[in-house]
Image 1 (cartoon, rainbow, N blue to C red):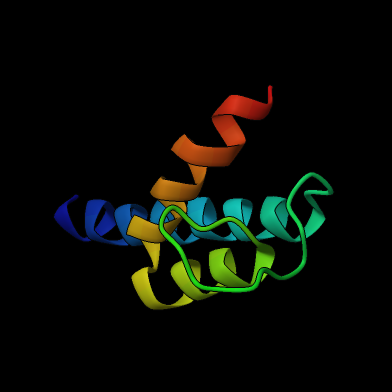
Image 2 (image 1 turned 180 degrees about the vertical axis):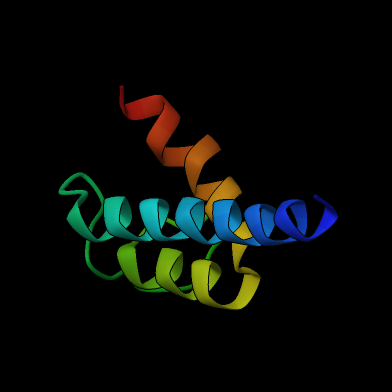
Length: 71
């Protein structure tokens, strides 16, 4: 049972990360690039860096800053 839980948790985090990355790449309200890096990210390039370097934490930031406010 513990092995199943240890498998489900990382899988759920990976699915969430992929969902946010896919949404970010298809989000037309975010510009492709900006003049300077800022926080919170304001362009797709900055969000891509956050999602790659911060992994799931970056996906959570994207969820709260962009995804949740869009719908």
